[in-house]
Length: 161
Image (cartoon, rainbow, N blue to C red):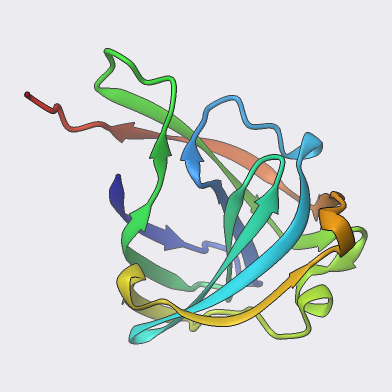
């Protein structure tokens, strides 16, 4: 399904915002590993860099400057375990630092991943910026610093056949 996602960083410092690419209320970041990262540029009114982490729990991440606000139109998220329900719950992680194998994600990928402080973009015009995978797709641990997890409620539109 496609969603319009609004993200606001209430902190004065940059923060990472992470969400699984499938709505999943059971996600535990502590057990998450990745074997690769792809970075995409989304343009519209401003610029957003969206990172896709490929691994045992695929997830998306955005690095937002302090007091930044972005809107992502048409973000694709899969729905699982929502049979006969009009509501799904997704966990969102907000962190000061994001690492892969104890190295900053920006350093590991070799580029600055920070989005503009204000942006409204569509995911339909994504442009690949960079990608990196481990040899033989070996899984590496994902780490965060000063992270907190919150849950968001997502209303699922009914589908009549």
